[in-house]
Image (tube, rainbow, N blue to C red; front, side, top):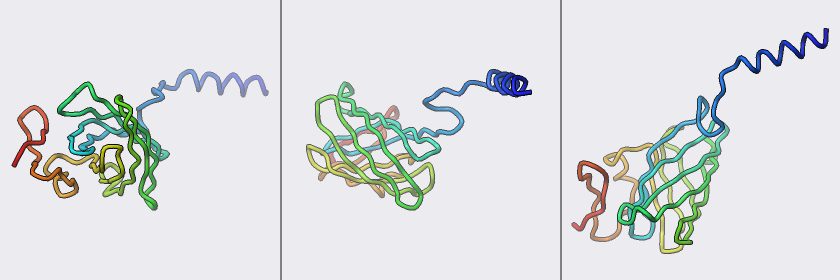
Length: 149
């Protein structure tokens, strides 16, 4: 009887569709718009069902300057995380959920402050982003950019 049970469980496990470890049914991806120091960064965050997630962003002005990090989140406490960039700079941050897939946050960055949104389009993000003095966020038709007022 025990052999039948083990064989049955093994066949169920083998018949189940494989879900990639990163991504899949229990995760969601959203756009990130961030201001680190006085520079615009764009990218994506991927959150998983358990509250943990990753993010990857790049400098709009210097696309080779990339940053990646991790975060944890809960509905009650909001979220927190850290970020490390290719040039050696880093950031720690906290954020508040607007919904399970959307929110905004801020933190400290080696070259100044940091603030960001996730899951929001540019128009929605404007109310939460603190832009560098004398700059505005525009959409040039291809991507967002910071331009002089």
